[in-house]
Length: 102
Image 1 (tube, rainbow, N blue to C red):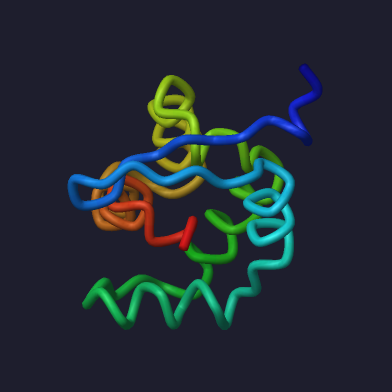
Image 2: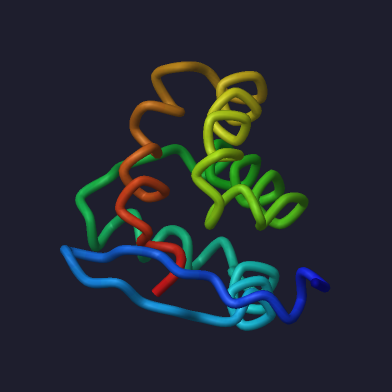
């Protein structure tokens, strides 16, 4: 099956939702620094702009790691490598609670 046509099933607050990988990929590829800042602000996560720029670049280079839990640890390692562990730990809730997907 072509990844662009794959339906992704994810859980959210006890429910199960399906979405098309192409839609999620498009949303992540079009995510701006401004949008990422707003997401962090909405969830009381304060981060340096440079760190968010680096994280955004990582996300855009590998959006599949956002929706596939098996790849998420790799994403956290990449974020830690380009920023630091403390920054990664601050950003983790954004990924773990799926704020970037919806």
